[in-house]
Length: 78
Image 1 (cartoon, one colour):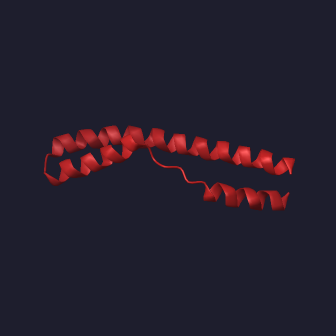
Image 2 (tube, helix red, strand yellow):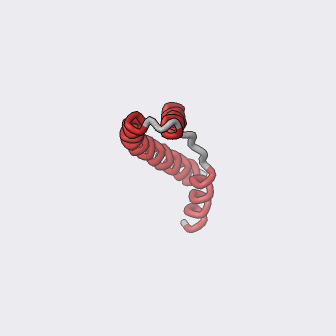
């Protein structure tokens, strides 16, 4: 069982999950707006980004959990 958990830990850590393109684009736009000192517009971007970052974190957590379960099942079959 320890060997299974060790293999699973390495597999889950190695899983690379890219953030959503929309998230990266909005983060970049927020920085550009902030640099140009349009503070009200930057605050609006930051508010939208807060919600999007939370949903993105949930999505990534779900994908990691699913990958771990899939890996666990494949290791148990071996």
